Amino acid sequence: MTLPNWNPRMLSRAARPYSPAERARSDLPGIGEDTRYNQGRSARQQIDYENDPAVQEGQAPEDGVDKSSAMRILAAASAIHTAACLLNGFGNPDEGDGLTEGAGVFQDASVILGAAGSDPGWHGYGAQTYDRRNSEQRARTDKMAALDLELAGLLQTQAAEVTKLRWEMGGIAAALAAAFPIAWALYMEPAYGPAVSYTFQTATAIACLGADTYLQKQQGMRSQKTGAAMDAVASRYGQIAGT
Image (cartoon, rainbow, N blue to C red; front, side):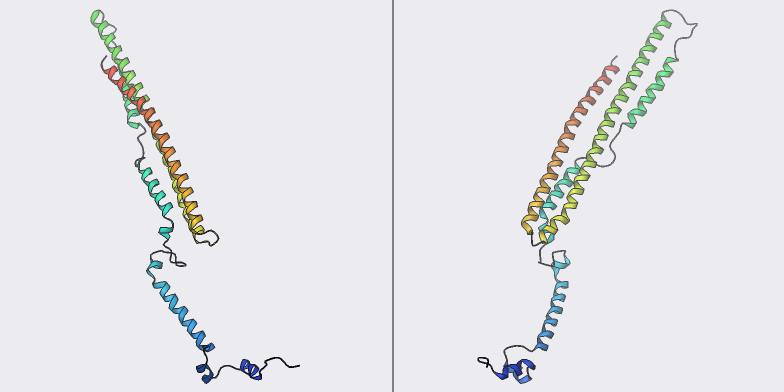
């Protein structure tokens, strides 16, 4: 039995490499030259990759994707969150330490006034008037000390609320920071891609900025209430001074 269209030259041709003459006449490149060509091309590609400005600027080397552009939704949310944090001020909030010290001064003055009654040997209208006015002054001093302590308590409450808000805002900042690597991984994963990453970024931004808005609104309402209480205390200072 013979194979159809079988040519003995096919076997001999397949069993030996191309000769230089055959390679020159053939449309196929030689195996050696092809290997060297691919090696050279890989080296050139590596050099181009390392010198690519996009790679040096932090862009995605796999696709030439700009990471900052791919993460722009989270970046914008982080910028807005940072601006919201600035509304809470800097440094340690005033806890009313000065008012507490002032109350102590008034309390010391009250003790002194209590010991400053008229001499037991002093009698008559003058002694009675002196004792009455001394008692009135001591009462005013006690009231001033009480108002200082009340106002200091309001400041302590406000300071605690500011500290708590800053801590909560810090938690939101941490959540945004943790979302960046997740969003980037989704972006670069072929099974998900940019669409899923953008959806994740949008949902994270809405949740975090929504929490920012809620916390700032609640803090504003509490601050207004505390401010009204402080105004009421301040008016009582004036009433005491007028007596």
